[in-house]
Length: 182
Image 1 (cartoon, rainbow, N blue to C red):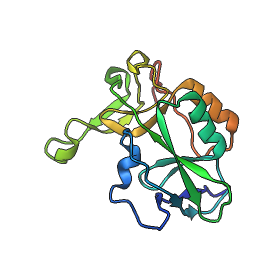
Image 2: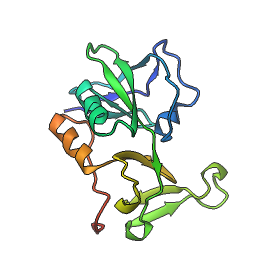
Image 3: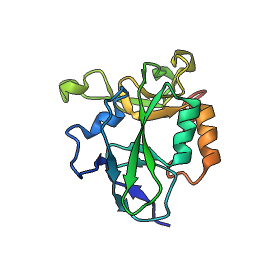
Image 4: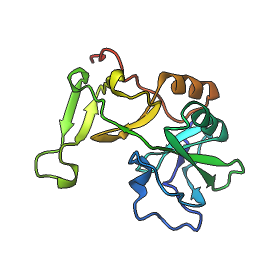
């Protein structure tokens, strides 16, 4: 079955955002106003997907309710209309950035080569077998990682509640405990 994929959200007018990565920055954003997303790849409709190259989290009303109930202080929810769909969806913006990567327990970390991308100095290019230190999460249930914001981290409670919603277009990878070697 083909994977149902959405494009990066735009303003309702169709105008792209100057900074489409802003929904992955882990910061409180001003209300962007009405949003829309187009289906980039038809398939079975999913309740929660990562849209576009920026992997913007977009979920159904039921998914939004999980975040609204279990992590109201960790996210902003912005309504998104999906082209051809009657049900409203929500962009899930994690508003916290936590410095909790446990580099010693990760399988492999790759830094940007020195001088290659000055804007990413000190950040991770990629992490295999990501591990975080739960003692350093400050009780956040949803967050982005300092120096590796591409990761969208949710607590076990959020994961379990999302799995109860079901029909997710994404999967979870455990990031606490011992690293699983290949």
